[in-house]
Image (cartoon, rainbow, N blue to C red; front, side, top):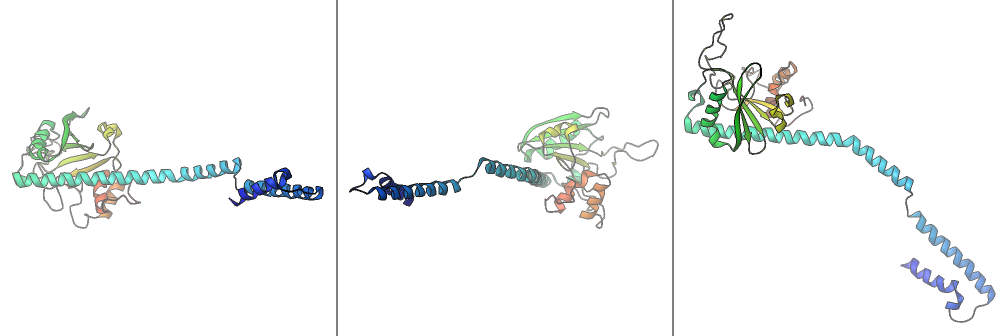
Length: 278
């Protein structure tokens, strides 16, 4: 405002005909010199407040470099948080459904068993009878593994998640002729050894797209430590108190068994820590 006010006053001084009264020639020359100095100062002040194109481009370049360095870390952190939230929700939902089914049908040890391993139709019957009434299901169907012919149940949940169910034991013995052992593990765990794979990414429906510990997480309906049937993360070999801990889960994962990633995540309070195999 002051600059505009001064500019208006200078406009009158720079043009004597706009002013009142008469001025001598010497006074007019002095006014013109003063006027030019004022205008030059005014223009220089305005020039100091601006940025050059080069400065703007350099600043944008620095911002771009910083963004390129930090964005991958931020994206990965968001992916981890989203993954843990999904896995925790699935665990909670399945645990509640299992508890409700136990309240209605009695202990899982008395539930229907299976006549053979990886029996898709019997697995579907088991799921529909005991768990489906307590879950929000969009679709379910049986898939067959090429080569082995094993069948498993695929369940699409309303929240976008997918779960597969496979029975790894049966109550009818299948004795191996060479070893003499029961291949169906029918002596115990005949209906508890149901492996559940939770897929956080719908693309995981294709086995080729499944990545353990990243978009695929394993659970069981049996605790080998407590010798009890209930829904929990996969901890089958953790059958003694000294094994049922975080160190053992990390060890098993490093040895090549990523099924323990769900247990590791749960033991860390549903977080993905630095030593988690992401």
